[in-house]
Amino acid sequence: MAATGGSLPTDPSPSDDDGPGPLHQTLVGIGAFVLGAVMAFGAAAIPSDAGYAGIGPNALPWGVSIALMVCGLWLVWEARTGGFRQMEPPSGAPRADWVSAAWVVAAIVANASLITVIGFVFACTLCFMLAVRGLRRAEGRVGGGARQVLLDGITGMLIAAPVFWLFNKLLALNLPAITASGWL
Image (tube, rainbow, N blue to C red):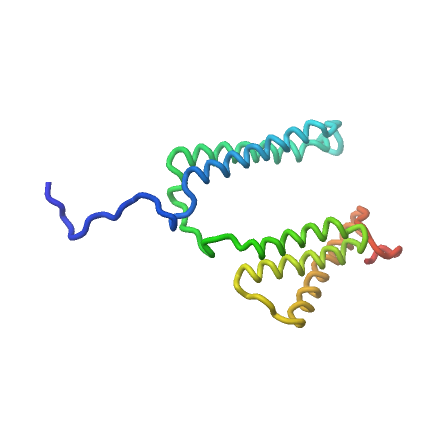
């Protein structure tokens, strides 16, 4: 049989530029399944007494853990049967930006450790400012100066304060505040 065309097909074997291979995809699926199993173990310790509408406090953790385990199994099956064939090539940097990730992790840790000290609104505002700085750095837009820091603080406050007021004033759920009036 004679070849009809001027060029031979290119090598279909994966290269480093094709993104994660089936092994990495399988590991992600196993990780999702294990995370779901750990959550199910934790959900088993929560009482199942039926509350409002017959749903107990352990319903949501069980739902999330089952969904994670199903997704983990599906990811493993997909990876072991040829991988994600329609997956687009990854965009962005070829390597992880650990400094940017550190900014985002610092934001979460700062929020968790300071929320009872400086209150929900200021802790979430600080979290927003640190996380945005990390995400901006990951996009290659480092800096911005004092004006950008001020804008990030105002934006974070405009997001955190209404959430705080919604929970504390309308839903009567007490988020940590720093004033006795409950407005901050």
